[in-house]
Image (cartoon, rainbow, N blue to C red; front, top):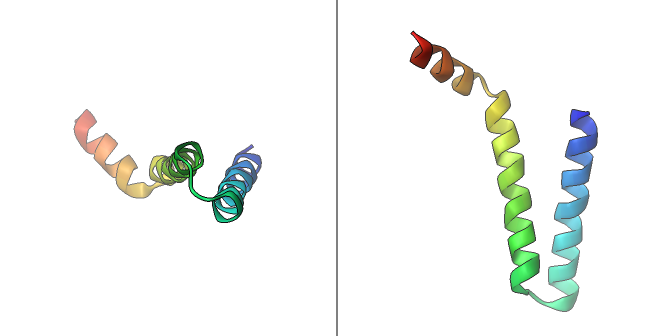
Length: 60
């Protein structure tokens, strides 16, 4: 499932870049691009060891 999600995020990212390059930047395409990057960063953060350590530290 994670591989599928990563592939879909990459497809959306490259499509947004393609649309921005060929049609010019618009608010919608830039917001889609930024949301895609934000979702990817949050996915990496949820899997990180730093988050797990902070979560365990706050439970004690």
